[in-house]
Length: 315
Image (cartoon, rainbow, N blue to C red; front, side):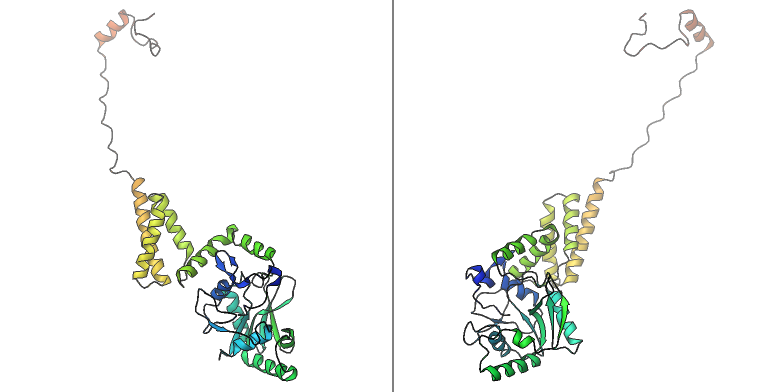
C-alpha cells in the first residue's frame, strides 16, 4: 500500500489518516486485504488496526515507483496487490477477483478501470517477477526511480482489465471525502459499514451473518420486550464465543434463541385452558289449557311484546 504523497488537493492533510465511517482510509484498505500473507505500507509508521510492515522510499517523497520498489523489498510473494491508501469502497471480494483473474491468466497484471474507463494501476494485482524486472530496467536506464511516473512501468506490462467504478473510487479532494462519507450512510450501505467498523475496532474477523442476528433481534423485541433484543444478541455472542466463535457457532446460538423467542411469543396467543361449554338451559315449560284460557281472559297470549324499557302494564 502506497500511503505517502503530499495530498496537495487536501491542503497537505494526512490523507491516509482521514476518517470515513469512523475508520481511517488506510485502515479501510487494510481491512479489504485481511487475507494477505504480508501487508506492507510505504509511509511513515502510524497506528493501524492490523499488523503491517513499514517501508520508506528513497528519497522520501520520491514518487510511486520508488515507493513500490521499497515495498517489494519486504515481500517474497509471487503475486502483489498494489493499492493506494485512499480507496474507501475497496472490499475483500474485489481483491480476491483481481488475484483469481491474475492467477488464471498469462498477464503480468490485472487492474481496475474507473467510471470513465481509465486504468487505475494502484488498484491492481501483479506478478512480482514482472514488477521487479520492469523496475530494474527503469533504474538501469535512468539511474534512479525517484520522480518517474508509474506509467513508465505499467506501460511495459501485459495487463488485463476489470471494470470497477465503485472499488476504484479514490479520495483526492475534500469533495471526494464528503461523497464517500455520504454514501456509506445511505440505507443500503450503513449497516454493513457499521458492522465492518465495529469488527475492526474490536479486532474481530468473524464473518457475521447480519441477517440471522437481525431476525433474532426482531423476534426477541416483538415476542418478548424491546430491551430483550440487545440483551439477547449479546448473550448469543457470548455463547458463540464459548462454543468456538466461528460462523457456525453464531448460527447455532442464534437458532436456539430464535426458537425460544418463538415459543415465548406463542404462549401469549394460546389460551391457558380450553374454553368450557356453556351450561345447557332448560326448555321452557308448555302452558296448560287452564293457563292458556286465563291468559286469553286477561288480555295476554300472543299479542305484541312491550317495547324495551317500558313496564309490561303500561298502555
